[in-house]
Image (cartoon, rainbow, N blue to C red):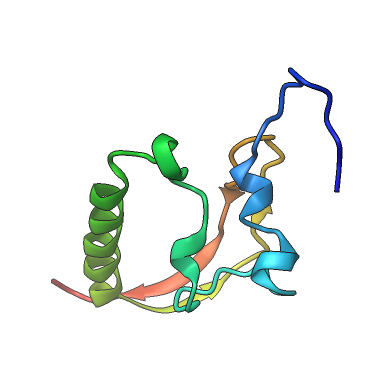
Length: 104
């Protein structure tokens, strides 16, 4: 427990919260698409500050990945991913892949 003085400014960082091993176990840094509790992440906020477009964003991602994975096969890392070090949004600067692309 940490005691904060009244009026102290606190920043909640989804980049940190979404990788908390107390919540996500020892594989918090791994992308596990079928993780049973994957919907519990904080990327779209929560409560009164939740993103109004989160359902649309999830639907768009599902459609895009379905279309992509219909044509892209044998996906492998060509080199290690390069992660950025920004404070509030964690992402990759590069994800070198090799793959096979099938016709339409």
